[in-house]
Image 1: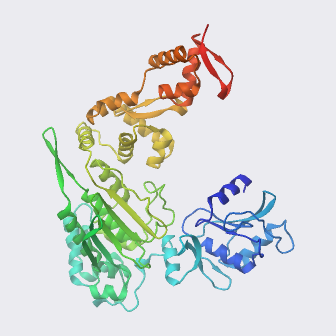
Image 2: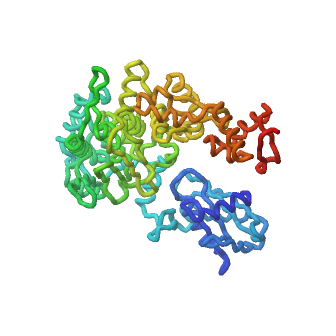
Image 3: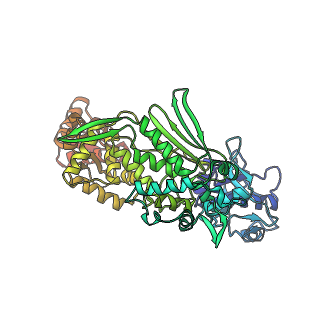
Length: 563
C-alpha cells in the first residue's frame, strides 16, 4: 500500500469496503478488530476490503498504537486474525507512515464462504439506518443469502420443511405446458408428454424416492397454490403499479405462482403499450412505446434473480415516461455495473432460471440483459439504466417517451441491405447520436469490451459508412458520417461536428494574430474548437512553414507573425 493510495482511500471516506478505526481515545482491542475483519469479509463484491487502524471516523489521521509489544511486526496481527476467524481469513497487514503517523492497513481479500469469529459471531457489511456503512449481525437467512449471492447455494433448490405434493396446483403444471407450446423454438418440447410428477422430477423441483419426499422452493414458486405460497414463502410478492405524477392509478399486489404472474403482467403490458407505425419503403414497422420482449426479460430477471430470503416485493412501476422494475437483493457476486453486458451469467436461483428457460420464457442463452438493451436501442429509445442498483436491490429503468423514428428507419434500411447491427454497434451509434462524439476509450467503456475489440467494432462501422474517425492517436475521435446524419434528418449536425478544415483553421489563426498581435495554444484551441494537442500541432505546422514565430516555452509559449 503506497502512501498516495492510502491517502486516496482516506479521502474517499468509509464505504462498504473501507472501515476506519481510530485509536486517539483508546486502543482498539483484539476482539473488536477481529469482528470488524469478519464484517468486511462478509460483504458483497469481489474486490479487497481495507481496515485502516489509526484513522478516525471523520477521516482525521491520528495514528495507530503499538500492538502486542512489537510495532514493527505486522505478521503477529495477521496470525491473530487467522486464528480468531472461522474459516481462517488470510489478511495482509502493513504499517504505512503518513503525515508523521503510523497507520495499520489490513487488506481483507474476497472470501468464498461466510466467515465467523472464533466465538461464533457472524457480521456483515451493510448500509445502516443513518445511511452510512456499518457492521450488522447476520442471521441464518442472511448467511444463506450471502452464499447464494456468491454462487455456493441455490436457494430455489432448498427443501421447504412442511411442504407436500398436495401444495402444488395441477393447473400450474398445465400452464407450464401451455407456455412450452406457445413459445416453440425457445422451449424444451420434450417436457410436453410428461405427467405432473414426471415434469416436476425432470425440472428437479422435487426430491423423490418412490414417492415425493420433499418439495423444493422452486416447485412452490412455479406450481404452488396461493395459500401454500403465503404460508411457506411469505417474502414472495409482486406489485404492479401505474403512476401519473403523484397519483397512483393502479396499485395491485400478487402472491401468485411465477408463470401466472408472468402471464398477468404481459397481458397488462399489452393493454397499456401503444404502437406507432413507420413505413420504410413498402415495409410497415411497428415501434411500440416499450419493446415487449425487453419488458418480458426484465420482469423474468427480477423474478428469477431476486433474493427470496429478503422481505420486500418485486415492483413493476409504469410512469408516464419510463418503466421501473426493482427486486430485492443486489447483483450476484462478480456482477457489477461495469460488466453487466459481458460477464458470464450468474443466476441467484439456478434451478428457477433453468425452469424459465425450459418453459421458453427467457432466452436459452441466458443473455437477458443483452436482450433488454438491444430491443430498447433497436426501437429508437435510450439505453436502459441499472445505475440505481445497490447491495440491497437491483433496479432497471427503461426509458419511454418519443421514439427516434429516423434511427429506427436507419437500422431497418441497414438490415434490408444485409447489415444487421449487433448490440455493440447499436450502443455506439446511439451514444454518437446523443453525445455527438466518442473516443476509443469512451466506446470501450460503453460496450464494456477491451479497447482492441472496440476498435474493431468502430472500424466495421466506418467500413459500413455509418461513422467517421478524426484525429490521430490520443486525439482520435469518432463521429457519425454525413450519410448517417442525412438519414437521421439532421444535415447541419454533420457540418457542426466536422468543424473547420485544416486550411480554414490556419487562416483563422493568421487572422487572429493579425488582429491581436499574438496567439497562445489555448487561444488557438478555443478559436478552432480543437484539443490542446491538436492546437499545438496546428501552431507547429505554421511555425515550420515560416508563417509565424514562437516565443517562450511550454505553457508560457506564444506566437506572432514572422517579421
